[in-house]
Image 1 (cartoon, rainbow, N blue to C red):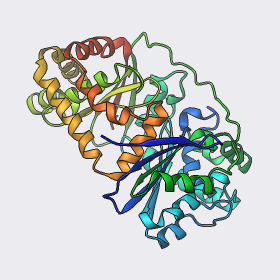
Image 2: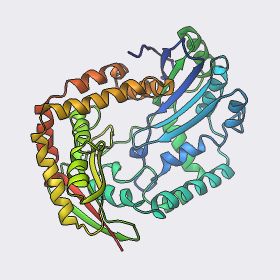
Image 3: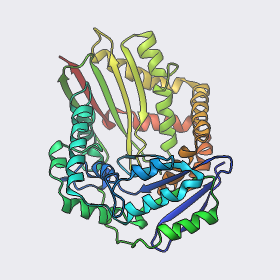
Image 4: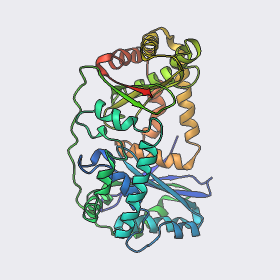
Length: 409
């Protein structure tokens, strides 16, 4: 059980407090409700670039890291399709430094042209290294726009293309900041050895005076149901042939989300999974294979991906995958219980880490119910065998699938 208390400042900033007197640390986690799904299709990669810019100096503080490191703090951030999340961990007696730093960059960035030029170069190099210059790196650049036709999940967080990043200017940066980096679009979680009263005092001191800027509500197009199978082939200098299968599935707010999550675990989590046992160990068609869900807020994807063994073809791979899907109905309750136990263990171990608790509280609040952090285990336990079989039949069908065959030269 993760205990928490909540309040909202007059400018709309939501605050969640989780006190843990056993810790010597305090985590300050701030989630902004903006990810690549909020981007203009002609200006993609912006949310991720902005994550970099947020460390490049704020209105009154030229270097974010320097004062934080001076008090023994650590920090990082990540951007997804749905959110951008910043987190800082400091010794409990130095928490005000974190409040000072985070409030100043919510108040305003330095908007320095030199920082923008530098961070654009960093992101462009990351684009090249991770997506263009390594084996299979361009999978999501190719697969996403085939699986999604109208929803902004059709481009990865890094963006559609390097040119979009190159063309970002300071006017774009200021507009994006004003639009999304506002108190009413943020969730602040404070977790650790600190009282509710102290958090309230520090929030009033450092955050309440920040202007409540009006928010742009970009209309996100709804992805239509996929009615036919889709396929594409890529050929490149990769070590092995690979196959990727993307099936549309519900988002995280849907009642069937956890059934899909557990189905993916049954198919491809670990060496005891159906796909590993049938495709790697028994038939040896694959050298490795896995299944997972993208875990997005809007309807996402259940992904099956595997590297083919030498001499094995895509027809053999498809045969194994189809047999594995059909065999879900023969697994019995023991297989579902096993993956439930694995999921529950992951949840329990995840709660050990203070930062994980802070992040989970922020994400649950963003989903609309902070107490999801305490309900998730019961929701997993409630998934029935019949529910798993129903979503298998409804989701893992050819007409709902986009396949990518990655051929080695």
